[in-house]
Length: 404
Image (cartoon, rainbow, N blue to C red; front, side, top):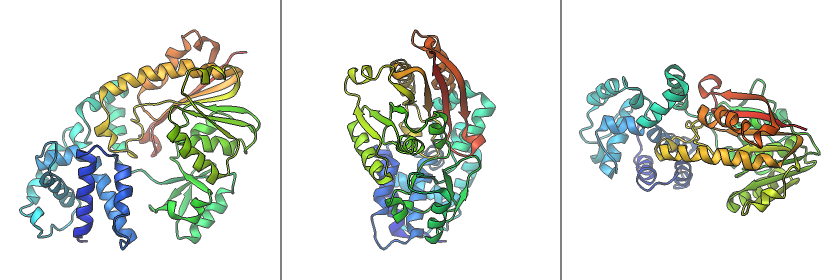
């Protein structure tokens, strides 16, 4: 188990881009993995996992290394040295790692781990907010779960085949998967693998989608032949799932504020063989008004803090600001009031977020049901899913029905 210079240099360059230039970790990692065609799978695994680990534990490692932002290259090397010592790597005799104080690092780790915001490596305001909304006990478990690396989950595209066939196809490629209880289309990878390079992916046999994210489309209770509207479609993970549940029959309208996201969705839909989707950019209020009382089912996958998916996006711990959460709550209220008008009498609406905060979830629904439009809806059921209880992402979904 030794460190290789070119892999570590790539890691340091990547951390510089994420911490100092504000780039997104997933984009930086994707670029880093293309750097050297001679790298084997274990080399790429080292680079990806090390970058994500240091991003995830940034605050703790910076405190141990006694460095402050903005980090110069020496600071980044010191943080890397902390990672290497805590991971049990022998420190090589490179100039940048000279004089690494191994015993001090271990001692400071033990000492700083007594404070939760440092131990779990999160900003103080996030720790305070988590305690305020979920309580000390639940938040402590939740943030610890959110710091575990995310598993890779596939969703079988049932427009093109069965879960059993997909599992056999992947087995032939030496990619082992397991079934997930109560998840009709999900397969969990036993070991991380770049599934995007497989022919199975290029042929649209599956999408990568968290297990709890896969519950949302089913919660919407869609049937073939319906008119369904996904109001915040984005790049369309849930839209594609809905299309498969509709068996390509009926009309599925995918809407978003951003044309670039819908373009991405079009490409994915083509690969998936999903051809009952229409695309509409929300560039004026008329786009929504035209659909008033026209849809059997409406999904509002609302913009949110993303505090349920930190394990998947560890850099958002550092990008997120408290004022963003205050603003996003206002957006959630507006979106619920505006888009709920699309549901026809007797139709159903699902409001969903990938947050674990009650203020973004059940409190939003309670507030909505007291509004003029909200009084026309009946609350049917909701699901609050914590990462600490499920092992996957944190999610919330509420099902409402419009009165006839």
